[in-house]
Image (cartoon, rainbow, N blue to C red; front, side, top):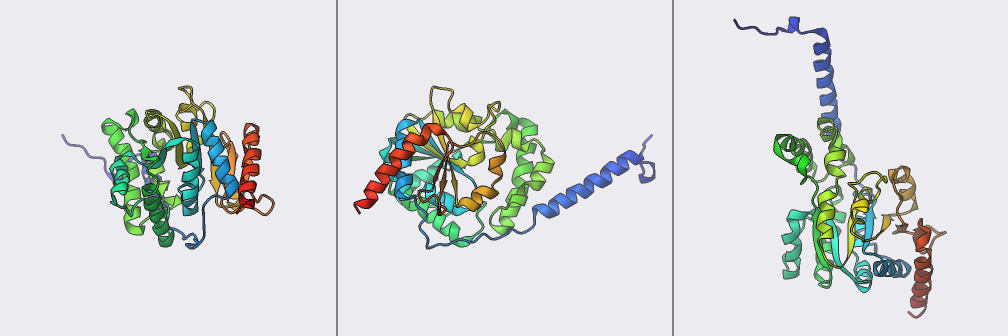
Amino acid sequence: MRTSLKPSKIPPVLKFTLYHGASVLALATAITFLPPTDISFDKDADYGPNQVQKEFIRLNAKQFSYVAFGDTNHRQAEIHLFAMDKGTLEALHEGGVKNYFLEQPYQRQSEIDGISQNKLSNDFASAWNCNPESREKFNKTYNENIKATPEIKFIAADKRFEGDGYSGLAGAYRKAALRIPIGLYKKVYGCWSPNTFILPLLLNPNLMGNGLTDDTRTAELIDSYEGKGAILFGAAHFQARYEREKSMRILLTKNHKDIVVINIFKDAASEKESALNSKGMKPDAIFYINPPAENADGIEILNPALQKNYEQAKSLGHMKLSFR
């Protein structure tokens, strides 16, 4: 005998759950697909490091196994333009850096390698970057400066979503819950915005724990390369709580290597507004692309162990400027 659960016979608790669950899903979907807000960008400005910052990069590259640049706002192209500037790359090379690990999916390594053969790419700009002019300058900087710096190997190092939590049927669901909404959003708007992740987080509440902030596979890839390295990833990847073993900052120091973390901010106002100040391990230093009036060098030291390098960088930087 066939039985069916008619609407009138649905238990009130289940009715309530279904109705409110559908309402929450609809609201989350609507918020997720709100259009992105534009961020102003000066395409003619110079976003490279000043002389003192260059000396500080060089000195720390000589001292540490890894120099990690924390991108504090993926929507501000200025941060990548600073970290991939010719002056930054020159300082890293002079400090002995052989490899530069970028927050690009590891499957894109052939594209990066192709730049040296003049096979240029117009898709390096962060998906968070919605300003057409900044995207253009971002891609141009990557192509020109990677090609002009053969002494450093540039490596697409992002291997998130490759662990055990993303295998099998459950893993396929987790990937789909993330990639389908953000893929649709990018198809409509050409970029992402902070609200893009609201629906994926609703569909997979553990997204932050089992994917976005799990650096295990990425750290394994980085650790497999010989020689000194620089790293350019979102600042949260280096902002571990001491007990969180999946952070790059923890994982990369397990094989007798050390790391210095320098967070890059567009300016002091961006640093004050940032949520990065509220939790986790602090960076060792901060760079300001547009330094505040009271800090012309654009460097703030948070780890006293770096004070000596800073004093030396100031001395060398100001001396070189005086000879120009």
